[in-house]
Length: 421
Image 1 (tube, helix red, strand yellow):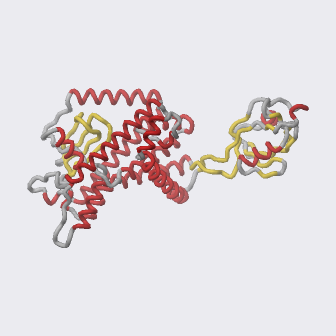
Image 2 (cartoon, rainbow, N blue to C red):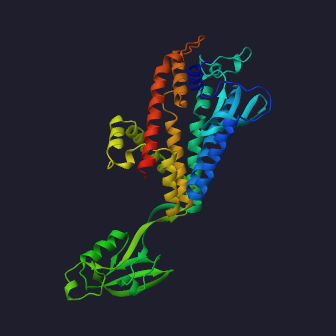
């Protein structure tokens, strides 16, 4: 089989089509060298930024569960499964059990489950006709081919419910909390500290930071305001003389015409633990927002004019550019250092939503392409006569989709390296 023919068949079948003889053994020397290099990169990543490694580990688990979805549902449907591999490329290690080869390949760029008879370009051995993917009813084919994306959505739901109930959902609290106090400022002199909750200023109720900020700025340096706050549940009050904005010094005659300066940083967002029913309610809305953002993002990054702008303009909006695992892990590392474990889990949930939707695009080699073919065959079929599409006619469109995907990947990788977030 030529390399071209092998590539075409694997794209159309959704995985490697060659079978390994029933004998134990590891991979080639090249495969093991590749595996050692990948392992070394993961170890380096763990030492350089453990939060980035945590995201990568989460992505690998998500990819594994994606394929578990395909594998399990194919078993329910009575389809023949011959391979379950993590990674692509040459084999590192594998074993056979009950006719299925399980193993690991050298390049951790995904995973695949091999199901026989995915289409007319995927030949079925004599005796296996009733076990082929295409021999099963439409409802079973749709369940099997969408099971991977369904698994991503389940992962996202589980992650968000876990974060919201254990770590808390990051949301408006209805309170203005002190997050920082400037040294030698009026606030510091009055005894305000991180974690205090400001209740009012001159009888003006403070609900959000803007209430405090706007009122203080409406005053002049040298004015005295009465601030009420709670510290560790104890209510406190003080008359505080505002300083000048530019110097932070004690007010004087020259400062009286300048806006007042209190010297506190505040926020009204924090993590609040939710009950499971409440968390599920919020998860539904948050996932809907994430799904909408994913559709917008796909439309933006696939726009060739946007790609040209990103490659040629260093000031282009970074939120509109394609990215890769390299960029995502860098962002997750920064988020982890600033906001901790639960924030990284939220990033992982968002990535799962994106992958789940992206994988349903109605183009081969995505799962959505197989779903589109199954739906087209269902529409064209008549009672007693099943229609089977000639997927070879879709090969030019598949080449275009793969080419675009590779272009986006290399563009994203180039930008991630040369212009990191």
